[in-house]
Length: 494
Image (cartoon, rainbow, N blue to C red; front, side):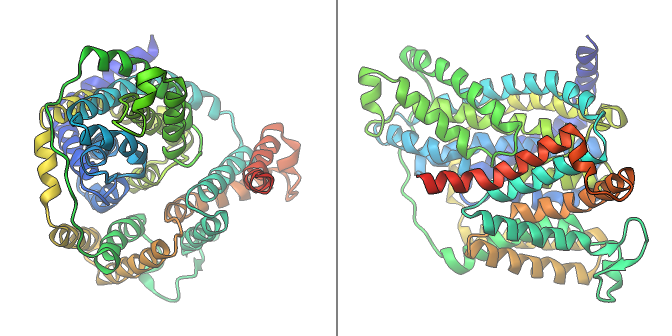
């Protein structure tokens, strides 16, 4: 009952005209971002991070959340009509959705994607409402040794799972940890690794790193290496589903939600695994004519299941972010940076120290899901027109927006130099397949892990065995070793 009362208070806050406007703008912008190939929610949120210096915390977090799950709705449009996934999460949708479009069923594919996203998003939001406070309640009991091991697990899993290579992921993580060390030491107050530059005494701004690695690097990569590209578009049929489509889609939506929701709660590398898993399950369960459609005319279950799994994963990823302060994807890592810009540290205390913000954010997920259903079904023709925006103007606009936003924070020319230096670093990383998310995660969680490590050693009177003496920290260390060792053993056996 207490959860219901807090949720009602959250709806009262999220339902104010200004917050509803921010939610609507975020959802619309997120859908547009999802539709445009190459610009994911991480890039969009990173590019807009500078607004945190001007806008109320609750409004901006509702806005960013709208972009976050709006992009997941929009990503299916390009996958189905152009066979060009706007996000990696939409890769599986393209496999069957594009074939449905080529066989004249683009409308049914778009409808099942939008409605499936709504169903999965709503169910997953209910899970966030019910389970996030419980997780936070238990997490309060953790001490510094457990917190350090938990952060070590987050750092390891995000680095090991994101990207093609564990070694490259860990290398990117150490770049982020090194950037996080720049500035004043938390305990002694001594300057560290500043090189005598006064602007670095407060450390490197997370906004600059996020915008540089995602927005600037994305634009530079498109200009230097992708060049002009022509895309063929399938004809858009009426966005509707037949009775048979509904009968085939509903079980797929529910199965996809059941597969995707648990993956959002663990640092398992985002939405790729659950969407592929959902596709495999739907193909395995298909029979007769339905099975024959897979890979040929396009099977509607192959769109419905993965889209539901995608949105369920995206929504439940907010549970570890809000309750433990652990991001499990690119975008949640940048959302963590947005929280920190307001001096708010997500974690077990968040549900007591910033209860109104958290519950308004959760309530906005329900509101945003309804908004996105309204935006996606009737206005799909409008979103398709966005695909005609020339890439040259699009990426030039991103660079201008990123530059103005970064300069507007402190009116510092040094920030602009740093922004483009980080952008070039992001370009090199992208060119050589180094994942960029571990840099952001390392930079944010590194200083926090350092503080917890020092506190843990103080508790253990300087003895490192303190981590082995406590059952939970020992168990977490075992999981860290498993994450690093088991994939390699599996590859050798394969």
